[in-house]
Image 1 (spheres, rainbow, N blue to C red):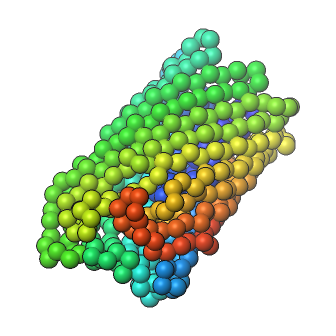
Image 2 (tube, rainbow, N blue to C red):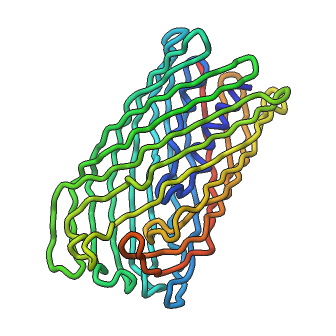
Image 3 (cartoon, rainbow, N blue to C red):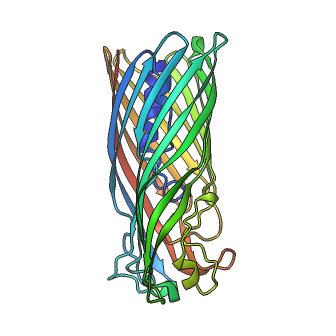
Length: 373
């Protein structure tokens, strides 16, 4: 049963997180590290979000969220009875938002695109008293583009920011406690912020100039508390609480603050988020198991950026697992109701409303193939 629920948790890391906190696509799960023996897995899937509403002029924004695919790869090696390690490749952060030019005169033409891939190297040491510690380093490779357009951006309309590909390094640390006799485990993991020193090219807006320079972008720190326990024969209860400090996700640059009428308007501004997940896993036969889980992320703040046009979410994920010898195939479907959002532009605490998004949802499907040896 432990193998089954570990697979469920790993799948949720792919299928359930959709536009969390604005640009998070996966919660940087360490589930493969807790697999038994040596383990190799491949995961992939796709997400189809729909985010739409109306601007303050009464025009429909159209669907501004673009669909995307994702992949993941993980290898866990058991060195001896106490020491193990893992390499994990994933795509935790990303965004692809485009306001169609033909729809909204207030925001039409505004776009943000963010791509990232993260590589994590971990070690875990398990003590004889069921406690264990884990930690390692995380390297993140990312790039992006931001384009502001429409009457809602006033004097900054036409601003364009190209962010070249760059690396950043952070670290991971955590602790876990297990009770194998009831398939119970509780773990707490901290992910440090990662700073990227990007080469950026800014242009457009009211100032007839192009500026190129190196600036810093920091992806946020996070805490994740995960737990599972057997509650009946072949039945497990599992869940997690995840907190992300999105308020430290900043895009430092030069030209945009000068072009802004208030001088200190942030290009990107997000609120901290706390996400709760709870679910039940059940083994039906020797080969088949399944689960259902629910996710809740409350809305934060009164207004959000047009570059991250959702505020909170509720989701349900249904997963099925087929196990045959050393192979485990997990398939899941997720539906997410994305929270209504009031979009605002301007300085913190004094934003001008430019649109309201009130018809937003997403469907996702994911598959994970694991091999133990």
